Length: 162
Image 1 (cartoon, rainbow, N blue to C red):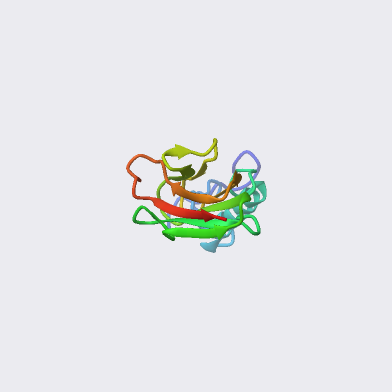
Image 2 (spheres, rainbow, N blue to C red; image 1 turned 30 degrees about the vertical axis):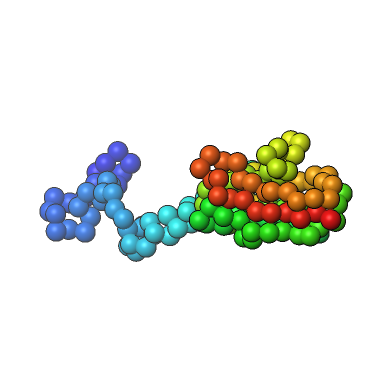
């Protein structure tokens, strides 16, 4: 008899009670089902997924920018080009641009008259799906929209302002 008055097992390995006081590690639960461990792992995984989902999504608190209503939309396309060669005519005054990136690389958009950039206006889109917007005051005339990223010199379009 053992210390607690229970039998520690028999001497023959064929007996059911052989070393019954020291269970060996197993994938089986105490009722003999091998799904016990699987149930515990799935429960733990589901709980962990729930906690991680509740903690947040993308990790940024910045709102996703969209194109403002009534904006003149210019899209950067793959192949280093804008979606159109000419935009307008638009009325003179404050003009709101929405710049959308439909390419996988960084693009910018500035407005120039002749060889001179107009003010500090510059829109930047980095990744596919990015949107930037801004407003610039323009007088009547013909302007050029340019992507000033090095190597993107062929990204030009004409803007007519009346």
